[in-house]
Length: 485
Ligand SMILES: [Zn+2]
Image (tube, helix red, strand yellow):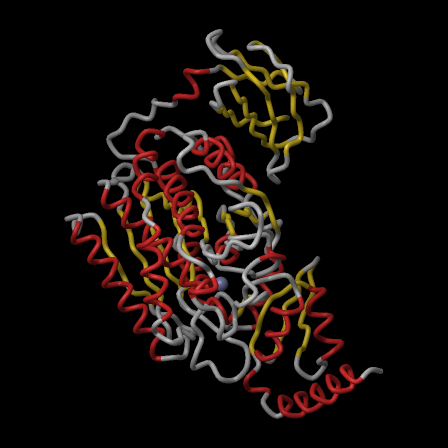
């Protein structure tokens, strides 16, 4: 036994004695079964495993032990979901996920308008909001400043609505919660044609640091950056007179860091009210560029493959405009890593594009060093604002704008024939390459010698949704989404 582990054992023993007397502080939670079992081995007095179903466990646990999860597993968020009662904790691991949308429901039809929005994104606005949120000192859910930040964010968003003269169809509400005194903030743009369908973008407003003193938790990247990104998306939409067909909502959640409390209460309410959520995208940490690529889409099993494929398609499509190009790859972030998990658990299609691969993400989070200067500036976050704008407009569409202006469709015809995808491209274009991308963002087939009327054999590929991407010699990209049966 080395010195370090002796010290660790002694301190755990001490902690165990301390916490054994404080069982009233225990909470119900759900987490991955393997993590619950590891914690049980090292802290048997501080966790009780109530039940295990497949890979998930419901547990009764001291909240301080959950901080170990954050370090032990590759997750930037809490790594568990809080539950107010034992039966909620049990229900979560016992109810199977049911997905409600298919890949073909998502389409890209607003290229010219979205291009205008992308031109309008301003990284300085993002920087200003990030620095303002950091100035509260702490947004820990039990601190007074957390609710000050929520009330002030409501005013900031209301000012954007007033400036755009849109108080008729856009409003902001404060949401109170049962399991935290902190409040969430929700902005709603009422849909003009299909108001009962929701397109939602969210991120958490609270912050946290490890240890008992939570009075300074700057939370610049985690997650002032996400809230600043969302605020810039709202600003750009309103400045460009955006009126959606579906209802669009932006959410800034309370108490994500203590087990996704705010988002779980809201998603549960939406599910209980039978609300139809067409797509959910989470922005949590957008400012720190830790990896070589720009956007890392998480591909954990609970994320929606069809929605992820739509994000790749959006990036391919809008990257072809050149000016706002960014690169992307995929990563995994594990159980309960952010608020999108709350929506996924209710069967809603949820996606989480992240600032880096999880191995390379911001090393300062959950410490007093998660400050603005570690992020450089707002330029990385601005890419996420652009992706958010692409997602909102193409998912919620535009009111009173005919849905026929798909430039791609006029440039090429695509079809699926058995286990092959074919295309016909006008003779004034020369195709340089054809690539097929799967739901994990992997290029699963590439052909470099391509004719304008060609077919790519996909016999080797499993059933599922794919995108084919044609690149012309002039750099133009033509995409088509399809399902192999
Ligand atoms: Zn976070």
